[in-house]
Image 1 (tube, rainbow, N blue to C red):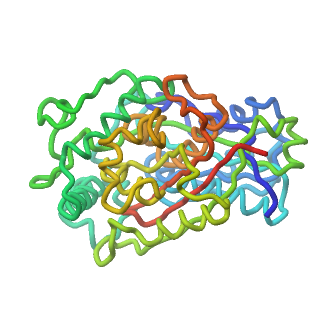
Image 2 (tube, rainbow, N blue to C red):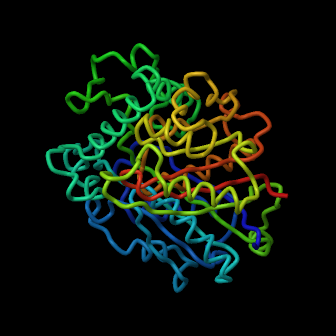
Length: 401
């Protein structure tokens, strides 16, 4: 396989983009990542842009045309992709696959989401309804906030199947909030969270669904943000003027999709997710033991636990314990979600998968804040999901050689 590299990464601070319009957001993402390496837009051969709520929240379609608004990109092959919360990862994979097919040497992957109004406020019920469209219609009845309800059920299954406690799962949120304190781009960087506060039902922390244990601090954020990266071949790096030692290699990647309906399948051991992760490791010629950096899709704390098992850093049913034991901390066995994860860094849906890969690349290049830097970072895994653990996009990165 022709080598592929992450040549540049750029993202906005996650949280609120205030009165920025969608055309402005797309332009900033594209020009921002090109500016990281001082390259003109004309250096890009192909592009893919991801978002999930652009029709429903932004009343904007044909995002590819907005990318083409950037001088130098008009007339080039550009597409929009949507795969729920895995849209960003899907955009990166689409670019990588096209480069491998010989459609160019430099590809651009962009992801964004604008979920808040120009005043920074959000319409929680509208957002809950819109995100609910990414579930099976048969599983929406009686659920005001569809995905928190679905994952409250998954959390209940996990706790009953593996003997995990609320405190065990809260350890994931506590570690991620601690990480976000050191990430200047994280949404919740000014919030302190300890185990007692994470579990206490008081203030903003409440049970989201009656009779189920999912709490506010178990949930990811409603977030505005954008992220973009450049993927290049060896020829593309030369065109960009980027040295190989300043890049990371996209060694492996894969995508798989399980049935949309949660009922009737094992969501604690999602077949597609495991299949995609194993294919990515096989393509990379690496194993979970080689990885000591990871960014995974913790839309809710239970997914932090399940994701740790999917990437192979914990045995089935032991994902939560991995965090409780401190193994996922920046100084642990494998620094997982050192960015703060979706729970504390933020979850701008279409940007999330791009940001996972970008932050992992920064880790391998030693570019993250020192308190979050994994020592001797040698390889990274990312696991991005969409829907009720339905769409899975996995990648494996390593230093360029």
